[in-house]
Image 1 (cartoon, helix red, strand yellow):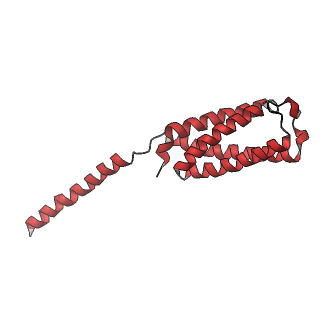
Image 2: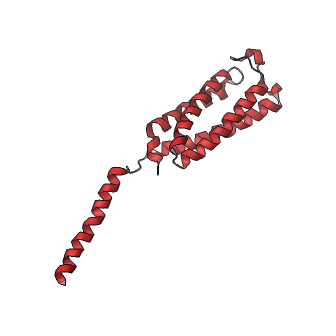
Image 3: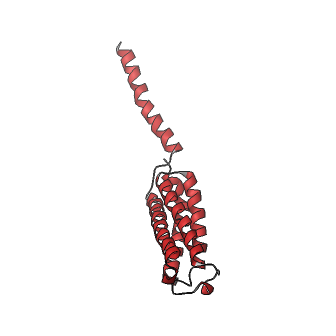
Length: 155
């Protein structure tokens, strides 16, 4: 009986080692770069919220902006810009929640969203240059974080 007990003990002790090696090779351990993904998700949530607010302002108070619609890069009514901002903001908030959940689709949508948001904000630069360029810079950081380190957030 002592032989059976001693032969069971080494087999039991090698099993966890094998599991650790398998787990380490299939799923990489998270690094400090996961913070970039959390940053990107929070930025998506914040930028989305800001764009929703900006969209409501453009829809309900077009006189708020200092530049007339003819002074914009794209000659469009502020109400149209407001609806665009509102839609992009809602998409951004949903995508930010998906990125926090580690969803791959959210990474892809987040990068596409940030690229579209970057272009929309460039078109809106004449109305509020500092605000638009701030959002452009945040969009670039979001694209970098999701493209380079996004895989580390997957569960």
